[in-house]
Length: 53
Image (tube, rainbow, N blue to C red; front, side, top):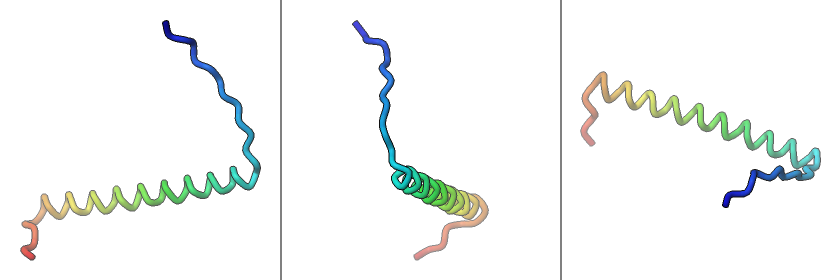
């Protein structure tokens, strides 16, 4: 038998919340940077032959 979902309440200090928001913002920026990097690689691979090393 499955139980109904439970709600969990937690306390977060203001400084902890601010730090979590800053970390979230940094991670979102990193995701954008990595997406742009991957897109550039896809564009390069589809547009030209890869360079020989």
